[in-house]
Length: 291
Image (cartoon, rainbow, N blue to C red):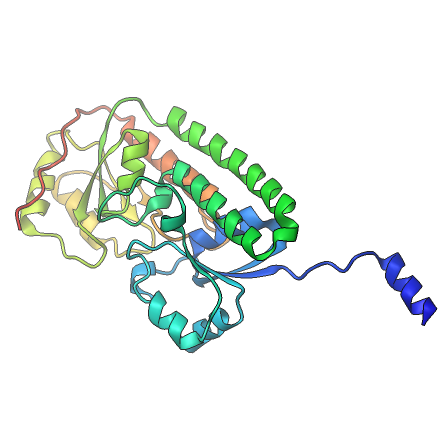
């Protein structure tokens, strides 16, 4: 018996199992993994390359929740399916709605808070708080991880501000997922569709088509993993070409251009900077359509 006790002492303290975290989609999962480091094990319900807005939960997703210590969601209507999924799973642990925990300035109608890197920093801090609430004995390690990631996000934020050309520029995207980006980085963004599940109106399509040949629109972008046909048609009707595909609410697979949040933002900004630096005039955004 004494030999066993001696061996246990020599082996050192038993390391706690990583905190089991389930995030609603891939971008939040990456923020959580970067913030928690090896102290967390993170699973995304909506994985890389999958559409957050069209996600249909499956029985295995309920099982993922049932085995979790913590669930992280964005809120603001991004995960309309999460309430039923939590109920079906029987999960009784904390469900943290990050948009309620982080002191962000909300923009009505757009849940894509993370498109402002400053908000991603706030999300990481809120995640660290949630981790520490469950593992207070690891508070110092969680704070150190969060501080390292915060420094990387601050460097990213500074890079975006110096990489984009100065002054407001108008660009067109498929749906309204870049309002936070526009507000943070002095870019004017018009969306062909008010949301990913709404059809563009003929009036708005015609108005945008007229602005392209006049030089008022600097760039048109598609969105990764979205049907490109309507944006291609808009560009062709205006005599232009798409400048590339942006990532709004999903990461790419590991071999793609946006395997993590920082890579996603760098990919988007590099495309924008190249397109928005082209000669052209600047115009005010279109007036909202009357309903």
